[in-house]
Amino acid sequence: MKKILLLCMALIGSLLLVAGCGGNTASKDGGSDKAKVLKVATNADFAPFEFQGADGKEYQGFDMDLIRALGKEMGMQVKIDNISFDGLIPALQTGNIDVAISGMSINDDRKKKVAFSDPYYEAGLTIMVKADNNNIKSFKDLQGKKIAVQIGTTSATEAKKIPNAEVKELNSSADTFLELKAGNVDAVINDKPVNDYYKVKNSDDSVKRIGEKLTLENYGIAMNKDNTELVKNLNEALKKLKANGEYNKIYKKWFGTDAPAAT
Ligand code: ARG
Image (cartoon, rainbow, N blue to C red):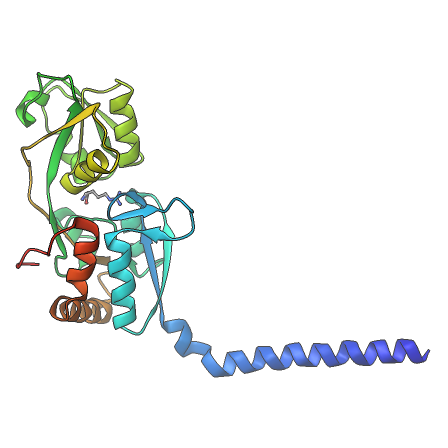
């Protein structure tokens, strides 16, 4: 009997303790701490901007370092989710996430749906072909050819404009490279830094890059149009990182050179 009583008392005691703790946390950091989480989404298959490291633990890349630095600057805790590229804008529109940073090019079509930060990187589209392909030397040579692109990207939009081209839309840029190497397509179109990183990082002699750049595209961080406060804060933080050298440090880490003066 005594034993049972003791057990009951211990049980009640621990219940009170748990309740007490719960109450404490709620009152201590309740609403304010919640508001400090910055919900970020990206499509982490786009090196060197966002990709999963070999250990599979942390998302790496220029965008990932940048958003963490921006979050720190704004005093916010950054939580990153990996979703499909064509799911980013819908996730912003429904308010499931606060920002999308994913090498996303600012363009008029997207500006109708989301707000963008100031530009943070200048890219553009290039072609990659098999090393032994001597027919494709520029974009105009892609007419009637099989081309792999990532779904929902500016590469996909541009590829579809090429007369008689057969466009294969795949889930990631990594998939476009696989398709090229397998000989299933004649060419891939991707953002220049992504083609460059793939070629150099893998020292892949079986593919070659075509120098011509089809477009000039500026990357921006996308947010919900109604979130004007966040757009303002993020732009201010970005300006600070550019002024205090932090942006340049991240740029140098991933691209090996100083950031161009304009960015
Ligand atoms: N810059 C291109 C676009 O905005 C491609 C971006 C793809 N990004 C990614 N993380 N997969 O459409």
